[in-house]
Length: 601
Image (tube, rainbow, N blue to C red; front, side, top):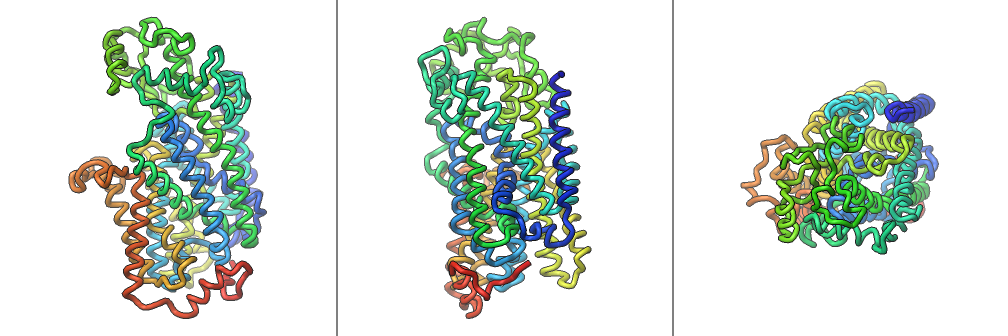
């Protein structure tokens, strides 16, 4: 069976499974639509949370970014994993104890104010839509490879499919579909990694293979990779950082606290029967996520080495990387390169007219590498590889069997679809439940509330799809911006809502607005107003990364500090919360349940 037919078969079977589950678990009420009736088992919820979490950014883009950033890319692993621990230990059980559907509802009740709830909705919408833009970038890549079309067409197809099954199933359908998607995507990630680890190191466990010996040599795999890429003018893989140490710290912190503030993940803890189950499902989610996150560094390093050995035969033989015969002849390039060229995500330009592909860092400051490239007649790097394709192309680069390549295509689609659907749920519930029912029309019927939720999903997917055609960065980079927005706006309000009984509504609202606007001002200066190209205003803030060298992806941590500071100052000059609110906050932190907080759904 040829490759394309095998891919159609695997993706078709996986889609049939998702649709079957969505029909079986169709939502029959508002409670089932928003919170799956609060009856999901902790292990099931942990698996669904892992699928919700391991989005296109984690599955498709993270290893690609680590592959490019080297050691510095570990910040994604530390930030996102650390964030989950924060979420599990500090927030999830307490939020679940409130028994509310959504984060804005929690903020509205805790800060006894519809205005606070409305501000939380705005923060949630900005963070979620930014997140979906990153997901739609991944959706476009997955569908473009699957259908053999451009990534733009892939985004249009993905938009229609994500919308259809999110609307159809609601949270109940999404939860059980995500369990199936988790199984598909984790197999799709680990199976090729096992094959490639065996090929390169003889060790079937990629986590161990990463520290193993490169076959045919007495060098470790990482030492070999360091040797090859530094000789080609890139930074040393095992030591390079994204900017300064301060930036790496703030980037990691932003991802960490952004994780704990992201609404679509928090919502998952409202779907289990009890507070104990919320804590338990957070633990299970960590286990399921760890399987992929401990594999990603191996996938990244091995994919990078395989890519270089594909275009330069001297990588394997240990010969001169700059020898004319070492570079791959374009006419003899493997079929996988031709397939990815159709998507527009891999490009070759023959700059020196020799018909061969030279791939190196033509902007290097390494004088030795620069001199060797000039002596060899190289006129610039000729291969442009979008980092978001590294994982999807990985089994093809390693020339693995067709069924493994098809499995990865199915996994990429599962990852992209599962998180996008979860985010649409968060947006839908924020608009219909918190804004329409909570603020504008409290007497709205259940039917019309559901309709409002579905209309808001449609609007969100169109906006995110449009911006996904010209995303502000790679999938994981765009998602990092969303984390920064959540970190600077929602996380401090949730933390203070749980752990400070004296924090009042004026302080919380001022803090959320200050954190959100500070972060957006800095991000939009770099990426354009609402991410629209050509509207950047870097001159106004003194140039790129002008705030102590901190990048826009890392500024959320500073925004969170601004939030805390403003909230504290405003709180000091305004009156205390009412006594019953202070008593409620005390009650939430008591290990056993309190009658003061019963808001069951």
